[in-house]
Image 1 (cartoon, helix red, strand yellow):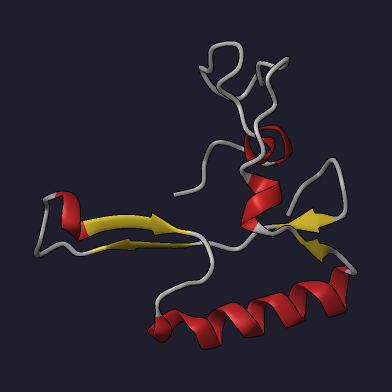
Image 2 (tube, one colour):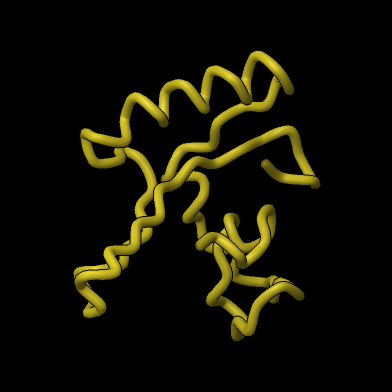
Amino acid sequence: MSKLAPVYALYASHTDKNDPGETGHWLRFPPLPPRFQAHEARLATLIESTFGYTHLSNDILFTPVPDLVPRTANFGLGKAQLIDCLFTRHRW
């Protein structure tokens, strides 16, 4: 959930300790893998009914913000996306 606007984004982060390589860790935004979709729907319902926040689609989240460098990450000018401006960099 953003502290700047009444919006939220959901994602899933997974770590497999038995597979320390690249396939053992991932971060995904909706649509999530099938085994996470029930959790995604439940969380969305709770956030919207409790706080009245609106879900941001991936198209909006990953919109480039070319004239801004967020203070929360080490981005060069033109590299930031809206998600970097609305939420912290700690998405793991």
